[in-house]
Image (tube, rainbow, N blue to C red; front, side):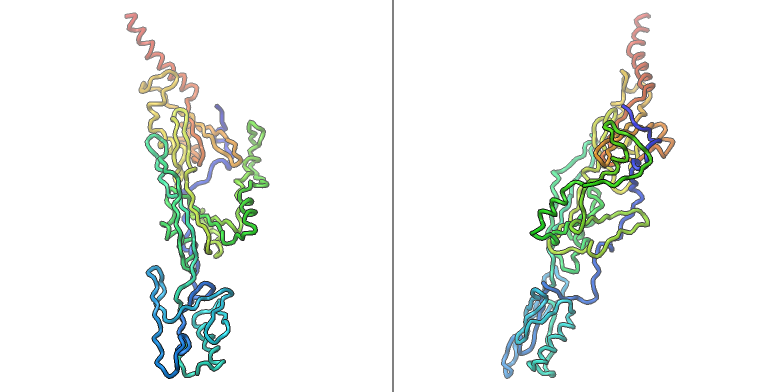
Length: 418
């Protein structure tokens, strides 16, 4: 087995650090609430106009207006009046008046507009009571949240304990001014846990029309049509003739536009995510997904034995740290060259890392563990999908073989000669 020495490794294969990432301020995930509530289609107003809504004889005592109490999940105060929904095109219908457009207005502006309309038609007098208008029910959005809340803690055998990987689903009915990513996460259990990715994916199904639904889905599922070149300054040809630069130029092919929004929750220090209000605001029918980290594993083989281990999400795991995690049974498995365990032979110090590249090919990296203990530049980071294979060097194998042969046959010959 051969590999490129870690000292000659191109920087593109060193891997990205996770310890330096800082959490994105959660305030960026919440939409800004205006000082005054703005009425739009879907709101329900409570309206009471003495003698008109409801109608009553001027000579009779007007009936008391109804008082409406909201549910415990609503922050709105009690309202007075009869329900008047804001219909399509943002208009309301009131007795004795043509449709009144109220979209984009505050309650005070609507009250003045309704009063002016009745005064203009002399339906009410300036000395009469002004209309009472309040919000009975604010417009709301139905949001679906899918979360991969799975248990992926590693066992002592090196195999991660996993559940059936079914996602937890939450159907949320959020008020309009709370329809954002932060409130969707809060209502579904909080920010992503250590077994979930530091990323939120929003699928804007509200923007997919029935006519182009199939075309958009086909576009999302299609592979990348082209790869941009990446200048690495290091030309390594694979066994199939593909150069390193060609392989690093490929992407995963995920098409992201106005339909799919990926929001990172950790960023390099000094960088602020470019999140617009349209990125964090949710509309009726949108889907929020927090994906599992099931694929963020590293695998072991050779003298380490077979196993798979979950890579930490928020801090770095280097080669020596990975060996400390995976090498629990190394002492009983590392005997090589015919040597019996526990006889004091040299430990294996040659590690091969089989690293997957973006194009799907693999790249073999050779690490000398003795040098990595003294040189931090050779103690590289373990990346998701890496396979760690521990082997003996040639002289270590020969030494172990010699020691094993001596204790197996040499001592027996000494006793036989005596």
